[in-house]
Length: 171
Image (cartoon, rainbow, N blue to C red; front, top):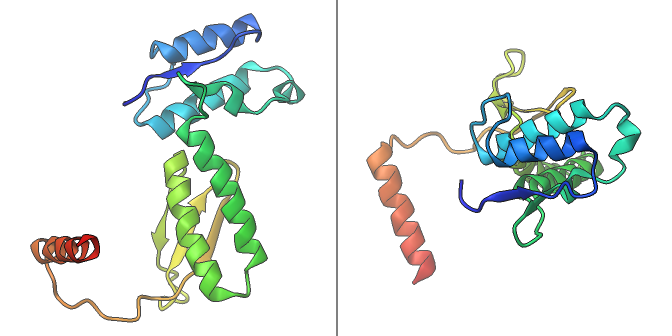
């Protein structure tokens, strides 16, 4: 998983300290599939272990820290997702800006561990829909179709084109 994540539970309740130890040693009751999922599992376990939501006065970022004290990547992605979702509403009628923000939000949602993807609206098939499954609700936006039809490239040709683009951009 890369850098070992350390949970700073010093000064917290014995239950939180025990949960932090379980997290560090991989003993959470839920199987963990990725770093982002690991953070979600820990957050869910943490929230479930606190009898009063107001006790969560300090955000989870204080608990999810790397060895050098930096905030964990899932916390950073969560903060950025919140910021981008707020901007989407702010730019709802400025479609060029909104479309870019929706794609960014979908990527961030997946980084955090939320399901996100594209489906076709059967009532408006010419407008694909980007969906994000937030913890308590689903949100979605109609998006424009790609303006150019598929040119018939296969996987090998696709990556040849990618390599050529990268080489040209970095030369």
